[in-house]
Image 1 (tube, rainbow, N blue to C red):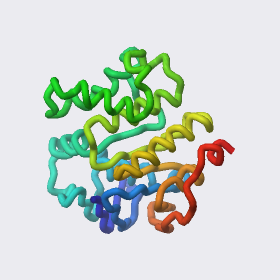
Image 2 (tube, rainbow, N blue to C red):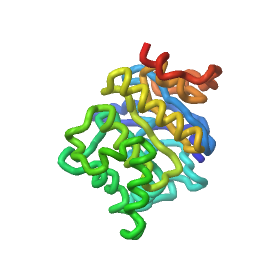
Image 3 (cartoon, rainbow, N blue to C red):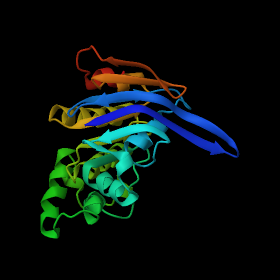
Image 4 (tube, rainbow, N blue to C red):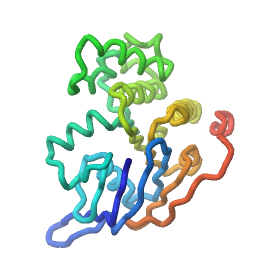
Amino acid sequence: MIEVTNLTKEYLEGETPTTALKNITFSIAKGEFVSIMGPSGSGKSTLLHVLSFLDRPTGGTYTFLGKSMNDMDDAELAHVRNADMGFVFQSFNLLSRLTVYDNVEIPLLYSTVPEEKRKDLIEDAVKAVGLEEKMHSEAGRLSGGQKQRVAIARALVTNPDVIFADEPTGNLDSVSGAQVMDILEKLHDKGRTIVLVTHETYTAEFANRIIRVKDGQIESDVPVLKSRHTRQEFIK
């Protein structure tokens, strides 16, 4: 699904280039659950931005679902982002005065899904995160954990090929974080491809594989050999 070869990203600060990513190479198959870890300034956020079509590399190639990012213009990138990618952010990015239903509907407003089919898709996505009873509640009245579950439902509603989760438990207490990771784990069990960016080792180990990034390069790329986590272990 994802193939990155010699990926490089540089930023210009005045006349001096700063290299955020240096010749990164890896691939992610359909159905994998991969964590990307690294300290602040390591390049992991820049890598996520490139993978999710929010930024372009300055060197190397990135192929998503068999098509090179270099061959797509900005309109095509935006279409793929909306149709084939789902996003979960640390800060939720919900519209607090809109209901859960209306927040989850937002990606569909920019899609080709007919209006008459949206209701079922929205309700199915909300049910998948266990918030049926909050369907018509204002998002701003929800707890942090519930808001993140709404964000996951919003990411699911277009049936994307991959879900990118950027520090999804970063603003949550341990109980709410456990609920969010439980949902992501169940989505993976159903065949979803998930790419998780986190600085938390324990959260990263919910994945099947951890890519560690340091100074803009891949430090390690190893499978996670463990038994499944339990919610009680997470809370500890």
